[in-house]
Length: 60
Image 1 (cartoon, one colour):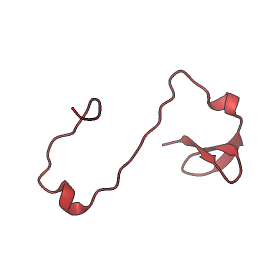
Image 2 (cartoon, rainbow, N blue to C red):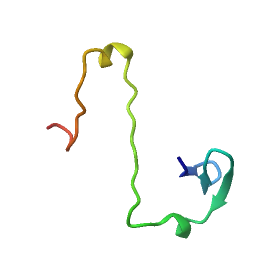
Image 3 (tube, one colour):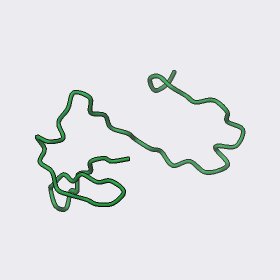
C-alpha cells in the first residue's frame, strides 16, 4: 500500500510504494482525508485467547 513518510534527519516528506521512493512537498500530502496509524507491539502471550477487536476511544 502506498504511503507517505517524514524523515526527521532529512526534514523532508517522501512518497513510497512497493517499487520506489520519491520526495514530495508538504503541500502535496495535505488532505482532509489524511489519517495517522499508531501501532503498539504486543507479545505473543498477550494475544493468545483474544478474539475481539477493540474500537472506540481509549479506556472504553
